[in-house]
Length: 548
Image 1 (cartoon, helix red, strand yellow):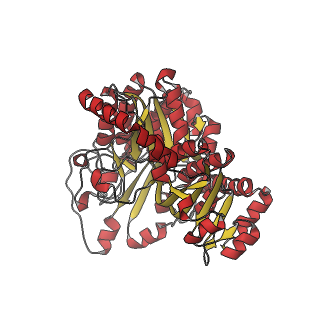
Image 2: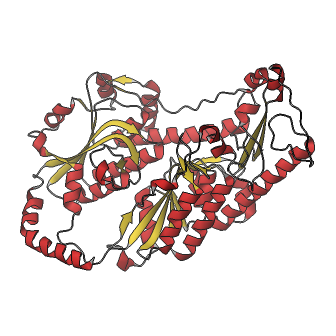
């Protein structure tokens, strides 16, 4: 390996003059760097495999941050043009991306956002960071705000002959209340009002600061949406109208040659003129993305305990890995799978710095696995908290009776039918289920108390299943720092010796495909509801592993 690097270094020395000339001529003075956002936006994206190079990839906020670092130091670059075709992400990712555009603008670069397809709430939120917004003809801007709608099915289940029971620890743990009620509970309405209020405030504040108007005017703009292209200019949400090929003219540029592709520019700026002989130290990014479970299924996204554990153990064993960013984008899931992940992360945190970076959602089990990190970072618009436990049971006997189906049972053991879905449970069985859930909830509270260095009474007051925005979680002490992936990266570096900072490389490991264990169709639901024997709570078609 050293020999190959030495040979490469010789070639670098021979080609150095050509590379210096190419780097100098790569960008004309007064040029704009052109970034296209079309589809998924994520904090960090693994490099593509060779056969994936031609495929369209997600926009990496971390790569955009590096792009902003490069262009703000480059006097040849006048500004950054961002074409947003489709923006597929949560509010936290949009907040992180917006912060990078705002940073470029604050550094004195002109930032222009072009919306060839118009835009909704998140697109307008992002575009508000720009010094100039250009919309395409015949499009609309629609910063409509935020809506949460839940269908309550209790009466429908009654008519069908299905009897639901939901067991929740914490009055705010609302998952499953739509099975038991025909209207929203006051606790659920309370926390939704706070959550949507926080997101609405973020949107209004972004429009007010970015468009340089007062907050009342920004509220009125949201309430008055949607707007046609001409109306958007009239009310102050946009500055000009133009198709993609007309953008250079709108900006007063000589043509398309004045636009430099962002990925090409970044590669040219970041590629070292001379390679290093020694491999650099790493900061590993370990993803916990999707529903937390014991096995992945063909539907949806899953973070399995086995897969995460393998990545954590690999990071512990790799001497080049000096620190870890635990990147969490999960609404939770299996309590046992969360606990297994937590155990591995605790071992890792004893040996190396671990910083949890919460993305769009890091709630319930997503918070459980984040708790042992030395520092927790999230955006103000991240959804987190939900420290609680819930399980549900559906009794099918009334439905079967309507269909003329009878069930005869023979049992040995007082609770032998506890996990069956064909009959209601009695008070003694219900008490047994409640004991199991209470024990899981107490474990959750103690995990948070140890990780956050709080007493359990304080955690209990913050828990009870309540969901928080990142801003509110930070105020409550459940989060250490508000920011995105780069803020988490800075926190890891802060925990490492200063001499390593300039050499550290962010590494996103890939998980071998063989580690994903697909389920046959009858087991799809069980991957969420019946993963394991330890949390023996409910039965077939019922939540058998309490979720947290």
